[in-house]
Amino acid sequence: MEQWVIYALLSAFTAGLVGIFGKIGLENVDSTLATTVRAFVMFLFLAVVSLSTKKFQLINRIDSRAFLFIILSGIMGAVSWLAYFLALKAGSVSKVVPVDRLSIVFAVVLAVLFLGESINMVSVLGIIIMVIGAVILAI
Image (cartoon, rainbow, N blue to C red; front, side, top):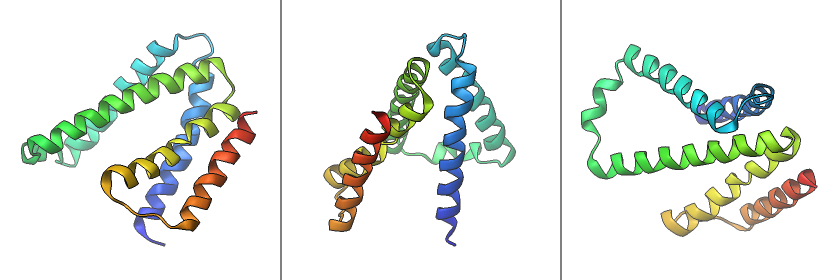
């Protein structure tokens, strides 16, 4: 199995746990505050990993264009998590998560439009099935 597949499966599994743990943690907590605490914990965890693996010292090698897009990605991630925790607070995990995972569809379409990536008819069919699946699960 290719390394990226293992990382992607780990990402998917831990993302699933985020919804479960988040829903339990949001029971009597404001969603914006919970998102802020989560972001702080992520910062601390990633800072320790970056410092302990000596990756942080590479920060001066990031050019300004890359830095800008990393910052924009961080902002979009924060907006995404604010919306995700608001949705979890108001709805059930089994309905919120499938709709949230429509981010896959958005990412593929945006990659085609802005990155020039190509998709074939099988990919289009997969996207259609994902949208239908998310709608069915959300109803």
